[in-house]
Image 1 (cartoon, chains in turn red, brown):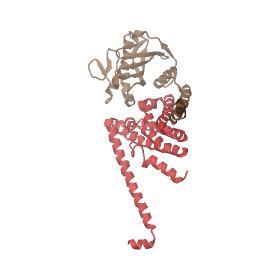
Image 2 (cartoon, each protein chain N blue to C red):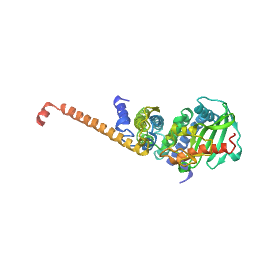
Image 3 (spheres, one colour):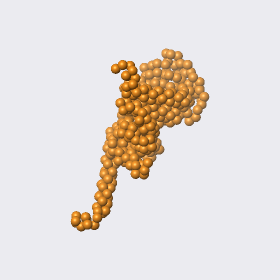
Image 4 (tube, chains in turn orange, red):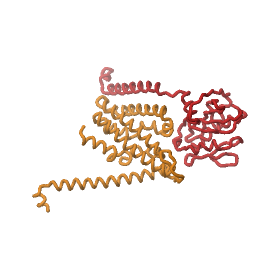
Length: 221
Length: 194
């Protein structure tokens, strides 16, 4: 794999096609579980692990799975990994397991995972699919952690469970607060993204203009 | 379509692929389930460790059937711990979407008499999507309240109840309160003895 392709997969997962802030996918766990940063990290890492594993297996089997049954086959594969994560989490991280509650088994129908399986893993090689799973998962994890951090600090006055102060705004731990914080993050993310995208376009345009032959520049001038 | 044609068709091939994936996945999960399964003993020890900070030995108490069910829910198990306190696993009913909450809670005893509730920990729940929002401060109310009278915990405030409610999760609060009440009812209707 060349560096350019690696960079594209990384920037797509983390920024350009960030599942939470750009594509607005996986909204249900994003809103429900980001009452604390710990929940955000836990859910994000669980999804990342499942994304990597399911992408790898689907990519390996992409020439074996008939097109007509690809969706049930993908769901079967994803459900298997979700069940494994549930078992491991219940055994070794029971606190996080009970915090994630019903949203852990619901990862089976998380549109980020099914979306990457359908649009990327079923059409690309194993390494690219694994990297796509990794970076999409990390993009989701970072987004959930950021939202969880803001909501926990403002809503509970703590950070990763450590009490910071007594000042709390209960609104931020409520469902309405989740929508509010999510909206603010989407707006900020897209504003910053658009700024850098415009800057990049301008740079590309100027670079193209500069490489024009001198005779062409005179004619245009 | 004849059987022979069906066996050579793409539909049959697709079915075979799906069945193969299901069999491999099922086999893998069966093996992992064997390796990662949590026994009831592990759950009890984990609950004891969660509450006491360390694992201690326990003895299971056989409860008479008439003490297992009451209007608040049910009491599944009672264990006598090394320090003379009892660990109770009880389920509260009437939660969100008629779901339940099951708690581990400590009934503290001194010289053989019930003196109050100790720490509480969530064992499991059904349909309670906001369970993760219940923080330690909510459960501390049970240990800090005087339960030596006839009052039970409720989400409503009145002279004969002890109020404990998580704002925005009233129905789940009912189920959690009921889990504690179920244990309290059992203790009170057994003359404070276990």
